[in-house]
Image (cartoon, rainbow, N blue to C red):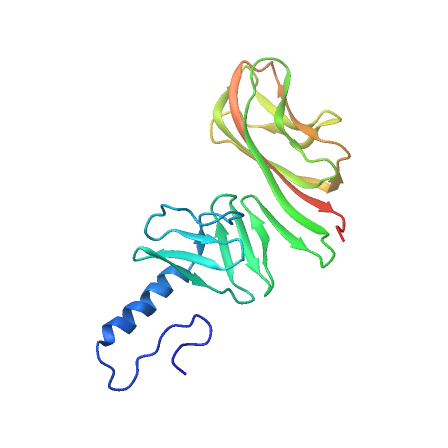
Length: 230
């Protein structure tokens, strides 16, 4: 056996001359495949002018790394994982092809028929503006089940002595009497997981006066589902 089984790293042979050549080849392969992160998953040929160290998943599903001025191709095995930098998605190879496992802000479980259960964090910065209340531009996804909403005041809220967090149908669902100073936080669990049948904005409502300014960063912690595709 001249190579290792999983990564096909070359072995040193007894009485081999120029052992550094074999060792360096093994190090190049380790450098290409350890903590694998690819620029993208291609649906077109490899770039014509790559940079040294560039890595891609090719149209055929193998991993291509540009090493010492040439493309080197690796055949993935079941269980290999790769971070797709273009989509912020973690991919896993099942022996047949690459599938997304998770992305930034979410983690997805896949069923054999294509059904999905996704744990998601929808988050954004919200400027409270002026007035008695305001709704976020980012929303709870349609048919999502929400476990709770959390928040951090990133710019002191003015005009109100405190504020509450919820939705139009229940402005206090995720908290009330929340601090207005920068750095104030809220951890607002749902009393029971709540399903929303329609995209729904988060509402912040002033207490003890009307808003005149401030910003808050909010995160919606939820579960999304999709049905079988085949």
